[in-house]
Image 1 (cartoon, rainbow, N blue to C red):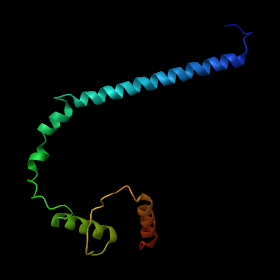
Image 2 (image 1 turned 120 degrees about the vertical axis):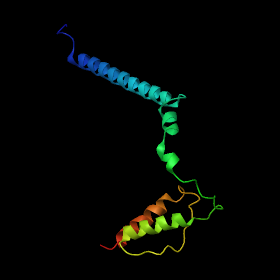
Image 3 (image 1 turned 90 degrees about the vertical axis):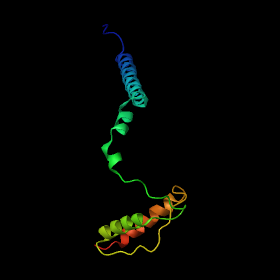
Image 4 (image 1 turned 180 degrees about the vertical axis):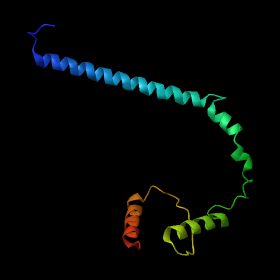
Length: 123
C-alpha cells in the first residue's frame, strides 16, 4: 500500500466497497426468502401436509347455515357481548351490529372516535 495516496481516496474506496458488500448480502437474503416462499407453494409442501393432517379441522363442527348478507348470527352476538362485557367490567347489552362495508375509507374519523372513547374511559 502506497502511503503517498490521499487518505480521502482510500476512504471513498473503502466506503464504496462496504456499500457493495452490504447490498450483495441484502440481495442474497432476499433471494433466500423468495426461495423459501416458493418451497412452501410446492405441492406436498408443509402447508399441504398441515391441512391434510390437521386434527383441529376434523374436530370442528360443520358450519351453520349461511345467513343472508348483512345479518349476524346469535353466536357472533354472544361473542361480541362477552368481549364488551369483559372489557368494560360490567354487563353490556348489544343493541345493534352492522358490518363496515368500506373499512379503509374513514380511517382518520375512526382514529378520532377511538381517541374520544379512550379519553372518556372510566378508570
